[in-house]
Image 1 (cartoon, rainbow over the protein chains, first blue to last red):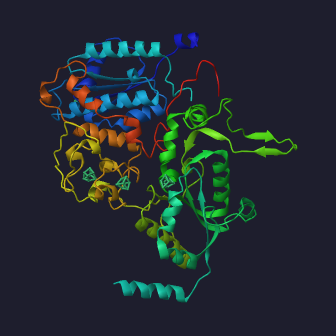
Image 2: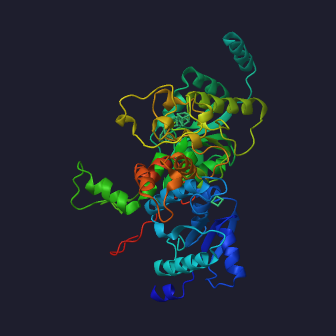
Length: 141
Length: 357
Ligand code: SF4
Ligand code: SF4
Ligand code: SF4
Ligand code: FES
């Protein structure tokens, strides 16, 4: 188990909004910032587009973590999409806990289009936390 | 109108075609679905007019062997109620699938797992411990639990079905042609199902595979209560916490968690009409794959927080935490009838240190 953990590379599904966090990821790329390659990014127009079933589906298909990114509060291009996203993710984290999936495997971050460095930092940190947690309990099933 | 219908029926009866053969079976069930079938009252005679019943454990005495001996596809329609939770259910489901031309998942248990499907929050070991040890009315100091095999003193081998850790839906076990959701299905929808049987007996025609005998809309579309389209609810109440529930106003607008907004219509809003919220027994609305996720999403988006735009930027504001804390047991509430059929299917149970299956 211990060796398994050491070599373990978590698989992260990232779903981010077009206007902020996805742009931040772009900036991180063009600025040649380094962050772990564990994340697979999917772009949506707004964090409120991220239906909880996308997240459950990711876990059901073996993701070790899901990273959700949106605009900072007050900055959503569709006014209040990110508030809805926040409530959904928070409620979903409670439910994931009931399902026996550590809620820390679902992370929500706000990164503006100028925050490439923040994006890189959060992904680095999330990857490290997931390495500590080990593979998703659903993976072994 | 009524007379016309009567006449039509008489005509149907005039030229009796060869009767179709139907089987009704119950697996992990409460028996309510069989009772719902009997609730169609005298219309049950219509069924008998068009169909010969070859298996119906709740009402008639048949043996599994009788069915086993039948030729493949010799039963026209099988109405299967109940979830699949042990080896016997699976065995009979497979046998009936082989013998039947049409397999219908009847009731929420067969369609989505239903109430017995909530057993997927635990495993066999935990369920046995509660059922055969911890319940106050149980005296079982040696913790004797059902065994799949035992030898009697006379040297005879007795067997019992194997109880599984996980409850399954019927379509996770065998191929299913049609679904009749509801816990239990309402009389009108049972009659729709009988209509399908009658048409099949008469013309051999069947609806497209996968058809659901209910409505293709949300329950909210069927519900007549007045609702606030811009709703924001600031506090959640359980029905008994309110002195009065306004019978005209949307229950969600009154702070009562109603699952109508992501639940398939077709029940005639029977709970709503009794001034109780929808618990979701008709399963997810069309096109929705995961009922719980859809209800969670809808409920979370209408929970309202004062001065939302002034929320702090870091972490989750206390107000949001407090509001969400009012949703007790999200899993049990949002997946009350659909846990086995959901994306995650069950709760993950970490093996105990002492070992065990
Ligand atoms: S669907 Fe409801 S009424 Fe039918 S068997 Fe299941 S629990 Fe009973
Ligand atoms: S939420 Fe419930 S009470 Fe409100 S309109 Fe929908 S079904 Fe009716
Ligand atoms: S109101 Fe909801 S819980 Fe009640 S019968 Fe209809 S679908 Fe089922
Ligand atoms: S547009 Fe970025 S969160 Fe809505």
